[in-house]
Length: 344
Ligand code: SF4
Image (cartoon, rainbow, N blue to C red; front, side, top):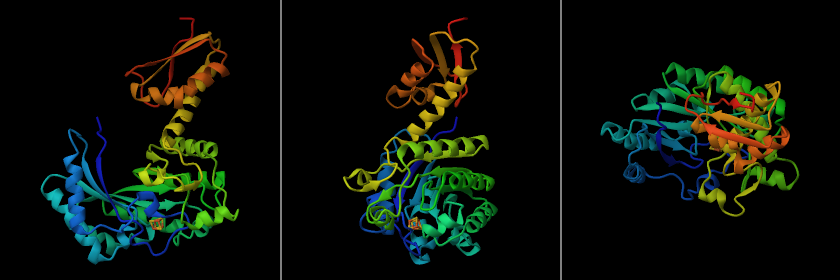
């Protein structure tokens, strides 16, 4: 059994960034208003999180998020790594991870971090479409992302890629093409963050001027579902769909527009499982009015859907009187089986 890592996030909001991408304001997203932490503050934060770890059995990872880690000046980056490494050497932390821009992944930066226990690097690809990258003022190309992944793998690092469907210039086709090209790079995992309009960003200005229209929640769920299935079919792990909900993002006025929902990932899984169940029901030559479906216990809430909506919609669509859902550990995850449609 694989245990989820216990992640100790250390935010470096917008630090090391060569400029501000149009959608980004890490202060709003992370809620950390006073810039990066000092090495001493990092030590205190790691210690505090370790105090709350309890009986968690997954590997412990210190994660530097919210900025461009490899773009930080060496004089700041190395002391941060020194602090995290100290906990690794004491056996309290297993490894270090961070997020960074593709164009800062170079032989030089990777050599500089080689002495530390970095195992995972998350690269902000955001899109593989040159027009979308340019309109979003990313300042790097899709080729930079491809080169970064190759380089990181060459150094034996595990690679995650982050993508943002619904950026300026995106269409359903460009989003799916980004998914296909990202999958070709064979990352170890991906995160999918549909674009939302966060306050104090260029995107907010464009939104108010009518120059940018974000995806609706319904469209974001639909396209993220297709991306999820695309990655799943290629054996690529999707570790997150939708922005992490922070207190600051929940503050009134923090999110101006777009497909922000505290349970976005669950909504996508619900849509995926609705399709799985509907396909099973459609495949029955004759369907009784009372049907029982089984899923792995971990997938129960995904099949039932947000507020049991899947059950209600399946009953309606297939004209059922009753639809029972049972957990069964023998059913593989991500699968729905019909055990009784009234004839057996
Ligand atoms: S998206 Fe990444 S590189 Fe762009 S401003 Fe935000 S943290 Fe910096």
